[in-house]
Length: 309
Image (cartoon, rainbow, N blue to C red; front, side, top):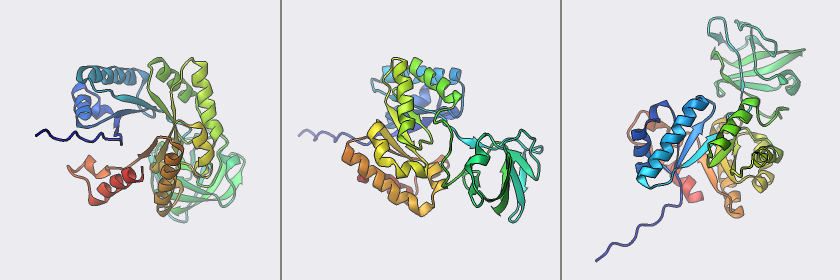
């Protein structure tokens, strides 16, 4: 008696490749374990290192006979602080601390930020989150290029940590010069998908699609939803994007933790109705970095994402 054929797995598994998973053997093992898509994070690495990785991925796919989709994830206009004299600064609740667009070496009172329009895009009372929301500041005064803040939640702030401005629309181009150079690299190397980070509006997707078309390519674009503004315009964004990614990392920083699960479900439902592929990302199996098995909560998280569609 023959066994019934196995059901075809409709949900796909995306794996982010890095220095510890860049060899032929590791990538082959990931593919055999179920990896369908290899994500290359262009926030890190060089064109040379990414080019080598792309070659290895394609070698593995050819040897195993199993296709591996390559997803290029562009860094986007991520705002970061600059450097401190000592490499870090300990901020305490109640401290006054200045964020400036002037180029200065950071100390206990001030540090530079990488966003030229920062002082124009915030207002008195705006909240500034640092280091993925670990530190929280409130804008008290704006003086030219200097934004003077009061520390609400303190902690150690190290060089080059990220900054989020929840509730503020950023007057920044959707693609930086680095993104444009990285995108051309992706086009030249024929990646299968390209993901645009920190999408705020449909025009961001239209802009990158125009660049891709002018280069003579038709690479599908993944819109990463990680800003509240993108959530508000999700219906319009799904009209122009090829794929949607619910990027719960930065989205969970800019919104409260309890807001993210229903938003995730709403976006998945919308994509299902429109027939658009949707990705749920960030911390899916975070504990397995250190442990051989996922937690019950993580297993439930993955299962719910698949059940939702």
